[in-house]
Length: 278
Image (cartoon, rainbow, N blue to C red; front, side, top):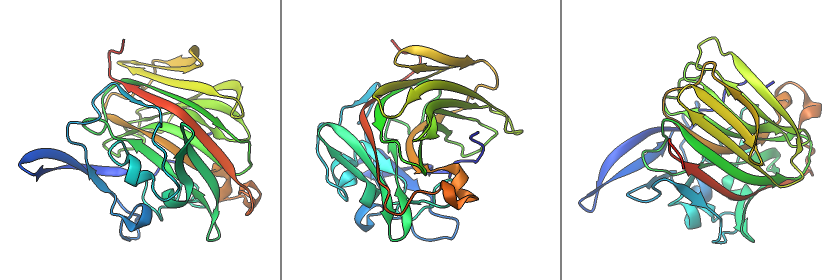
């Protein structure tokens, strides 16, 4: 059961003047240790949205980027969790410089061990206004079945108030498991609902979250696998493509990836629509 809170990610959207025009600039919040926030190749994790990336947002990953160059090529479209942040279990470390690449029309998360720690990454699509209230989010993905790593593609509240403002996840599961979905209710008590499937990560699948007033629906390959009207979030949220180590790795060393293990999580395309969608 997915019960650990996500790390708060992009904490604030600031407005600055840029050549006489106004642009939104995202600043990432660093680890609680107070360390600096840097991205790939030591770059500061910030950038301007401008008028780009209006909805509907669609990315087919047609521009190649080798490891260490994802933000240089795709920084106008995506942000990343900064290098050095710990993942949800605190066992893995976000290393976008060592994990992310684009090739052959896919975004490739190459999960492996770097400097003695499992290396993971998380990608945040840059849409107008950062997050939005309600929307439709679809991703086509496939992954290798490797113990110790997992995927959590999720909607996280812009307010950073969790569990009060809720969370929506699909897919959310270990790579050795079956694709599952979670609705974390907008409830200080932290209640949640889980929806399972019999689908493996080893085949290509399209996962969709439909979030509308009072209703969340989860679709796998355009077929509904679950829905709920209970505790539906009603505040702005942003979409995150997050990879990490298994939650059990926090307390159970046997749940951690082998040091020589490697898993590729591939994303063929993703789309984001505003509510109401077509």
